[in-house]
Every structure is written in C-alpha cells, then in structure tokens.
Image (cartoon, rainbow over all chains, first blue to last red; front, side):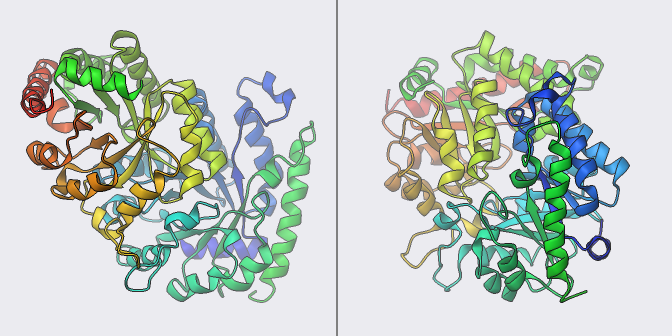
Length: 274
Length: 274
C-alpha cells in the first residue's frame, strides 16, 4: 500500500486507528480454548468486529513466536484472513528486527515476499546496512524505532551527542539518507507528549506509528496536537485496551465498541484537516 | 549452562568456536532438497561433523523464519537434536529481539521456557525494561548487542555523547546495572580490532560473542590479542566459512575439516591461558 492509498483510507474511515493483535493464549476468553486454533479464532472475531473503525492491524510477533509452530500458523492465517477479507487494511508486522545485511535480507524476504505484508518494524542500532535490505520492495514500508513508548527509552534514545543531537534525532535525520516518506515511517511513543514537536522539525511529512495510547497511558489529544500533519501523518495503535476490553463471549462485540469510541475521538481530531 | 560450565567446555575441547547455523535453502547442497526437511537434514549433518571442534551453535532465526512454519519446525528440531545428542553444547538463539516489557517477556518465554535454549541475542535500543525480562531465568543468558561487525555499526554505535562516552560504551556500562557476568554477554564484531581493548576496560570479565571471523573478514589473532581474558572470555562465531565450505555430498565432512582448522588455531591461542 502506498502513502496516497493510506491517506485515502484515513479520510474515508475518519480513523487512523491501528488495532494491535497482541494475542496471548493466557488472556483470551476461556470458551475459545476448545477451538482448534484459539489464537486465530480470537483474531478473526476481533478483526470482524473492529475493521469498520480502524485502518491497520499490527500483529506483535512475540506473541505468536511464544507458541512456536502453532503460533506461526496462527500468525500466517491471521495475515491471510485480513488480506482476503479486508484488503484495504494496512498490515504491520511488529517484529523489531534488524541484523547484518544478509540476515536483514532474509527477514525482508519473510515479511515482504513470503507473506506480502505492508510493513515491518525495524530497530536502528545496527545502522544503514541492517535497514536498507527492507527498502528494496515497491509499496512496502520500514517502520523504524525512533523514540519508543517505554521507560527504557530514556536509557539510550535521549543521549545527547557532541553535536547537540539526541540519539533518536540522529536516527530520524540519518535514516532519511536511506529512505523517504514513501517507504519509511517511525515509531514514536504516545507517552512522549511534546517531544512530537521536536520530531516534526526533522520529519515534517513522514507517517509516525504511535503506540502507547490506552494501557500505556499516552494521550490521543496531545499526540494529535503536536504530531498531526495536513495528511494526518499518524497511525495510532491500541492493543490491550481494545482486544481485552471484555473476557466473556461478548469479547468481540465489546472490542468493536471500544474501537468505535477511539474512532469517534479520532474523527473529532481529523476535523481540522479534512 | 552457567559460566563455569562454559569455561570447562572451552578448556576440555581447546576451542571457543561457535558454529553459526545460517541455513539457507538456496545455499544447501542440491541433493538434500529431496529430503522431507532439507534444512534439518543439513543442520543435523553439520552438527554431527563439527560437534567435536566447537562449544556452541548459533541458529540465526531470520533464516528459519524466512521459511514460515516449515522453518520454525526445522529450528525446533535442530535445537532438540543438539540438546539430546550434544547437551554440552551452548545454544544461542540469534534473534536480536527487544521490545517493551510485556513483549520482551513473551520472547523470553519462547526461547527460555518453551525451547530451553541457553541464550538469546538482544538489541539494546529500547533500554532497561526491554532487556530485563530476559534476565529472570536461572542459568540463561542475554547476549546484548554492543559493537557489531557490520559497516552500519558506525552509524550510531560510535556516536560520542556529551560525557565523552560512545554509545556502545554506554550500553556496556549501563547494562551492568541490570545484569552481571553470570547472565550477560555482549556481541562485539571481530572486525572491530583494537576496539576490544576499550571494551575490556569496561567489561573485563564478561564473555563476548564475536561474529565476523571468516566471511566478514575479522582476524582471530587480533580478537584474541585484545579481547581474551584469563578464562578465555570469548565465543567466536563462524557461519558461512564453515557450513558452506563445500556444496557436494561431502559438505558435512568438509565443514568438519574447516571447523577443526579453526579449533586448532584456537588451541594455539588458548596456550597462554591454559
């Protein structure tokens, strides 16, 4: 999916919500455990209930890998299900990969060739040749970690160098030598508040993937106030607050209601640019 | 496996070689393609031929994931085969993971609980709470990226901060607040030469996992000269130069010969400390 198509979806649905599929066998409703593939059964119901209100899904690879082969099967089935039934949805493999060139190339092959997923999250620590193998696929995206939503983001990402530049700023600046706003987005945590102003000085037009609204406590209003562009420029993710909103047989219906609530808040925020 | 057991293996075998299982379906000998599981068949033969000369195996997750479910099955079978037949071997899941706390916890569950692997490589960009979930398992190890072997290591890892500390040095120093030399090692590329001197000033006793000898051009002598401790303190990895040394039906035998050559060079280097 290219940038223009993504923007059109946002305008059409009046939503820039991404539903994070952090599906944990220990947290899904008990009645699903009797299904042949409980993880996929959960995802399918969540997707059907939330699709009208979101423009993206983000399966978190860790949750699938933790179940080994069964988990990979559920992951592949989930991606296929979205692609077949909701081809307008942008899919993010939240994998936070990144390795030497020949290895990153293998990861790119997995997500972009084998699975035809739209985008993958990548960690920047290993630099240019760990990122560029992901950039050679037409219509595919790297979503590079810049300033994350967690407490540990302060350990290294905020370190200021001798040029007065913080590490996350260097990542934003330097990575533009390898990519542009048609094939790269950045992860910026919703918990980072006014830091979005500093980020927009370096990447005024790039889309940002923003986790941390919901369970992690970030504010949607603040993210929009400091991070929104004329094209929206934001994909805001919510995982736990939506998919685990209810633990009964009504779990999917309630997830849909929660997604709709977020979509309505987003429609409000989009009024200024639509 | 704990530190003392690892040191004993190194002394016993006069080797600190790790064989990297970067198994690529496009690079294995053609006659294996008729096997039911060519990747596992290749790994099994390589392991049987090289086990006398190495003390560790490092399956590179990217290569398995690129094959989807089949790849995960081959990965799990490979780990089980090593554990059953060569329980003295140290196993490294080269995954370069790292995410927010609840997600890192899932990755830790995968590698340490489900698969009972000894160690996993972790990327430091997201800081403390992305690393510590891996540290709660007795006898298990985090191998944290410090100074990698690739060209891109210069992009961010060498950035000097306002305190005069380079990023990889900050990672080495700061991570010692979370872990010690009984549950953490560091990745330092063999291509980094005299930088090992600087690294040993900060982590004099930690084991270092050293990729980059062989196909990437690093020098074993230099690594030992500047990086070896009284307990060895090094696990040096070679992947392509060993596992793809020959493409015929003799591939495993030749891999064994190549591994033995490296082991003999290592025995020479170990003379000063044994």
